[in-house]
Image 1 (cartoon, rainbow, N blue to C red):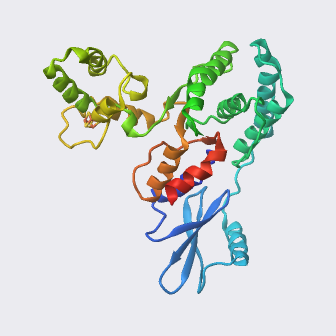
Image 2 (spheres, rainbow, N blue to C red):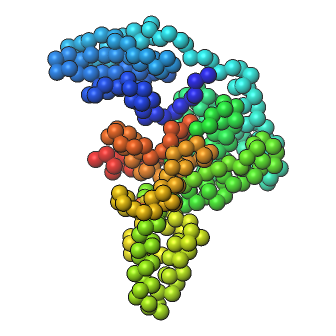
Image 3 (cartoon, protein in one colour):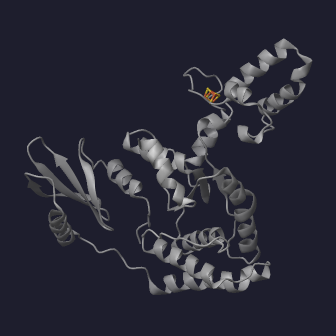
Length: 345
Ligand code: SF4
């Protein structure tokens, strides 16, 4: 079966990487199996389709004007007539087994760990699982206390178990508090429970992704530490201890986890990498980014700004900030529109 994806940006990326998107051509319609591309030649609008299963492009028609809604309907009919393969339906047994395991987890396993069974939490998780399997968007609203975080972590994990996806799930949040709760509480807790019940073989791995100014640059740490040591001031004792910790690699490069002032963070954070950096081969920030671009982590957690910055980056033809994801979950999605407005205006 083809890998299931929820990200429209991924579909555009897939076509672009396959060399099927011409300069000035844009995606104007996406269906589960194909996309419609539009190119304005200066005189006419030319339309092509790309079959997402075979990754083959085919010219459809031209028009003097951009498509109206009835024009789009006709375009869909033409595309459907051209599709060479119909997407394989999800085998019923796989679908049923995934639902059964998810149900069993909520009704039998979680209560053994002190969590009460809630009917609305289970139906929320099942509707999320259905949407994941059908490559649809699940728009979910749940009352406080429903347990939506457990619902989406478990739905995503069980989806991945049954569909053999190795691509990470991106969880986009609005607040640092939620990111902390996910990484310090929810994901480790669910991971331990699923390991104990032999549902997963390895712990659920995760990484928090942030903008580069949140990470230490080894080169700048070295230079700043050297200047502070040269000053030889008694009051810098604690600062030197933290810089030593960073310099020797004993501390994480995540600056948010260190007792440093904003001024010091600004002096040692990653900026632009200069070409002749002698630490580039062993740079911890670079290694972190390289690892984060792979499927090494089950979950990648970021804020809405970074996720939308990735979309802008792709649109601008620049490097992606995230690897291709299997699933995308927006928690605190009510804040997404405001963030998008700030970023796109
Ligand atoms: S490669 Fe870039 S981030 Fe890494 S140490 Fe050098 S300048 Fe800093």
